[in-house]
Length: 112
Length: 113
Image 1 (tube, rainbow over the protein chains, first blue to last red):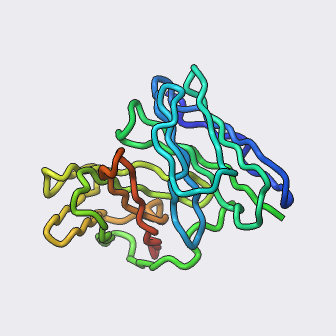
Image 2: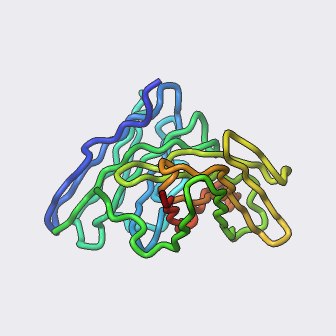
């Protein structure tokens, strides 16, 4: 079974731009969560989706948004990028909400 | 690759020795815990989990111990190998309106040959 797939692997953007990251969960997994990982803060929860509905949201500004499609694939979008948005963005999937999380390799975003 | 864990506590162990990695969790209502391993350039990899109604759970070369009295979780790795070198962190799941996971900042394990 293929694992969680995230694209792209690396991104370089400049301040003010926007970015869209993609996540394909493990086949059969319907819940997708997004996390931001930085050296100083560790993993910070962004949001969780299940059956195309956002179930939970972390303490991030409205510039961070996401969605989930009917095939459980998910995207997250960050608008008006700031230098502090530079981080590894990780997607995790589970069969259902609140179950064991399986992570992808992440998208490394650098904002210049 | 990413620069995860630049300032993490580090545990150095000799190859073949046992490793013990500790984690203090924050919420006494947390009912499920997971240990993850993250190698450089990769996402976190599930190692082992334990529910709050258990004190101990064993996997292949790994054991997780849960002490709810002091809100402490530990991961024991037997006969540590070079491939075990990575950042290890724990995650706790608790209900706060809806369920959420909180992740520890991690410990870097270095295996010395």
